[in-house]
Amino acid sequence: MTTPTKLAPTPVIDETARLLTEHYVFPEIAEQLTGLLRRRLTEGAYDVDDTEELARLVTTDLQSVNGDRHLRLKHHAAPVSTKRGAATLDAMRRDFDTSLGGAPRVQLLDGGVAVVELAPMLFPLEWAAEPLSAALTLASRAQALIVDLRANRGGDPDTVAFVCSYLLDERTHLNTMHWRDGERSEQSWSLPYVPGARFGGSKPLYVLTSDSTFSAAEELAYDLQQLGRAVVVGEPTRGGAHPCQGWTLHPHLEVTVPLGRAINPVSGTNWEGTGVRPDIPCAAADALDHTHALALARLAA
Image (cartoon, rainbow, N blue to C red; front, side, top):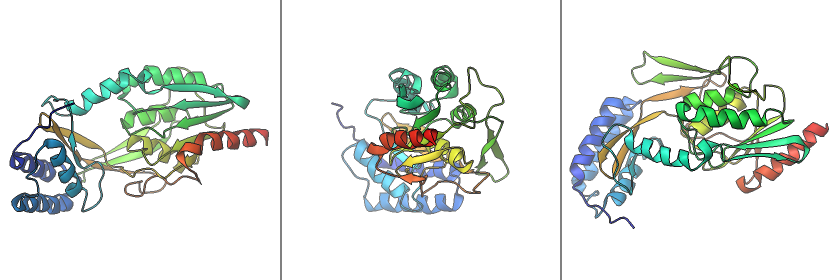
């Protein structure tokens, strides 16, 4: 068990306020939040015994204005590097090594229906391309495919585009990121070529979601849903659409600040705050069995 680490809150709040002011995608909200943080600091709200409790309190305040779930102060039980983003990267690498590269399950169900589970994250593409290509190529011969994102908490937008490329026939515009300065945008497209074999854009495709599905995993479900390519089955997702960057403020604390916002070319909006709404709502625990039955009925028809 890790011994709680106590610290003076002022340096953490000061640096969090600075990063919000310099980087948060919504400058007006950043101004409100920095005022809130400094007021709460003056009131003694952050005079707590350990870093974990400080992270919880600050995160609650950071998300109190516009509910941005990517905006948070994260506690890490083990000390992390001060290099930008290193805390998140170290944790991701551990998860990658213990999850078969983010594709822990590939299974053929009765009736020619395949399941590919992508969890716990959509890892950086330079890591994940090989295992994801292997999993999706193996499933490409199925008559119908279920992509299970119920335990996926997010990841890399480039990996979203990579996965979509196996599920479409043609190069397709998926998403556009608009950055804080308002002058830059970055489009995301599926790839014209993939290693291995595509499942393609015509056979039945289903995506499973839960109330734990978050961030890039939500983008994957949302992109395919908006294109009319997949039927989403399960629970509404958590609702985090803003790409973010992490900064280590203390050996056990990392602040993550969203730098941009995603806009889907079909809907003209995103899933921020609302989550991805399933086409067929059901309890996450029942979603796989329910979707298998749907796929078999569709194939029989």
